[in-house]
Structures are given as C-alpha cells and as structure tokens.
Image (cartoon, rainbow, N blue to C red; front, top):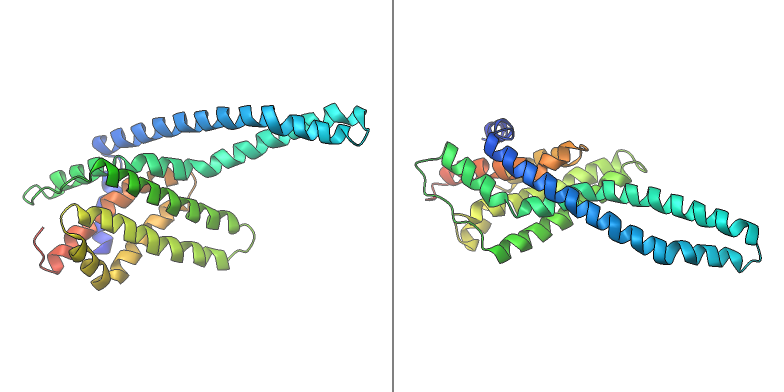
Length: 238
C-alpha cells in the first residue's frame, strides 16, 4: 500500500500540472527571498554595521574602525546568505501550502475519476496549514543543521520527528478533503504506523538540498494516494 502510493507520487511529480505548481512555488519563493534579503540588508546597513564601527571607535582605535566596519559588513552578508539558504525549504513550504489543493485535485481527478471529488480547504484553513508546514520544515532544517555537530543521534531525531509531524500533517490535509475531524482522527490512529512511514519518505525529500523544494508536491501526492488506500481498506465511504 505504502510503496505503491510512493511510486505513484514520484511518477506524478514531473506531470505538467505538477510542474505548474512547482514553478509558481519556486517563483514566489525567489521573490520572497529577494524581499527578505533587501529588508535585512537595509537593516544591517542602517543599524548593525554603524553600531560595530562606533563600538570599536569607543576604544580609541580609529585606524581599525573602518576595517572592522568592512569586516562586519562582509560577515553579515555571509551570514545572511547562509540564513537565506536555510529559509529556502521553509519559505517554499509556506507558499506551496497555498497550492496543495491544486495538487490533490489533480491526483484525484487523474487517478480516481470515479470517486467523489474532495472539498478544497477554505482560504483561512489553507493559510493555517501553510504556517504549520512552515513550523515543521523549520524544525526539520534545524535538526538537519545539527547533524553537522552530532552525527548519528541527530540523524535519528531528524527522521523520527519529521516522520511523525510530516506524516500527520499531510495525511490530515488529504483526509480532511473527504471526511470530518473525528473520522480523520480515527484513521490516523488506526493506521499510525503506515502514516508515519509515509512521513519518513517525505522527510527523505526534506533532508536533501534542492530536492527539498519538491517536498510539498511529493508529500501531498503521496498522502492523497495513501488516504485513498487506507479509506478503502477501512471500508469508509470517500
């Protein structure tokens, strides 16, 4: 059930409809990062660099003031670049969260044309879902950075935490299109192991730079297929 769902999801990532969602997500992500870069750069130039220069000047080291200001600007720029690289995954997850219904509708209409179409999330719930995905991806990326410090332990923690959180959130997204909250909770509880394993597959995408941009598309497609299989096995009307 899980392997078949994953194979279908991977096969659909490069589908023309999915590519449209990806390019929209990528374009808006780049725009958002440019805006963040300009805002943070303006803030650093206005406040941080002058503060450091004045701080060194207070030690009566005028010859060093300009040099340290230059070093401060360079290190601030490098730190900002690293920070933006860290934000690529989370920002794209927020933006992609607004288009997950497009992915779900495409998968359902293409692979389950005889089933009742799911109900798209209201805009407010879609925004809330995007924010939740943002928090999850931030957490996942923090663990990914920690892998550099303590190999092994944090690798396990990364996949354990993200397997649970990503599986839960993406499954709820797919299932809530068809069922009420109580039914979704029942399915999630009864098939928690399968859903967590699906989350681990999504976490694998999240852990790979560049590939992690595809995480929302793969996650949504995977859980649409997995929900269909689980609901069918549980003999619940969809």
